[in-house]
Amino acid sequence: MSPAPSPRPSAHPPHARWLWPFMLVLGMVTMVVAWTSLALATDRQHGWVALLAGLEAAWMLRLGGMAAGRARSLLAALATVTMVVAVQWFVAAGHIGGQMGMAPWEAAPKMGAWYVMTLSLMANTRLDLVLLALGPLLAWRAGR
Image (tube, rainbow, N blue to C red; front, side, top):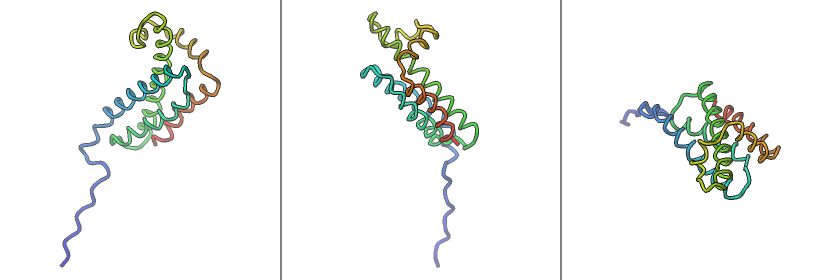
């Protein structure tokens, strides 16, 4: 006699459903730090990283156990927009704060939104701007 087949385990155990907020925040922080460091080290904006940020946000939500659907797509897109804004802010703060002897995180609270937007529009190429806009759309699609 063969033993009875064991029930198939679910793809996401019930205890893993609460991990998605922590994984999303961890992924966002590491992406912002890495992207900002890359941009400041090379003096380029690297808009293509927005596509990676969108994929990473959707992947962290999926890996964290968030249920598929519109909520996950929307959250992935919003997380990507947040990362894009944070990186633009910290890169501008790094350049301006560096001239005053401050680290990017010291200069960032002292900068206004219009000033950051002006500096970002001057620093980004058209291709960078297109890629920055495509990042949240990719996150929306990958988050479904």
